[in-house]
Image 1: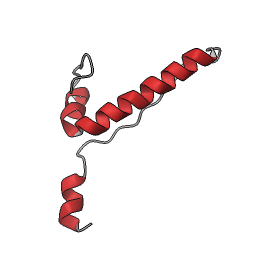
Image 2: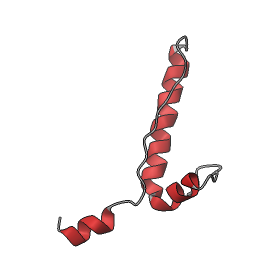
Image 3: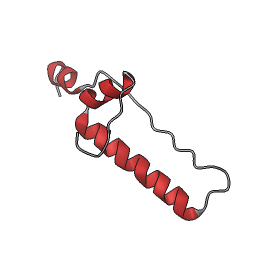
Length: 66
């Protein structure tokens, strides 16, 4: 990949997702929490900077339509 292509594919925003479901959470709660974390990561990856810009500005997105 050349420098021009690499610059075009880089995102302006970076993010990390942390999931905390408590010390005594059951296996189902832990599984659901990690599943939702992966789902959120997938949605953010597809939407790229447009959605991250809204999040970092304090916005909220409802539903899964990006």
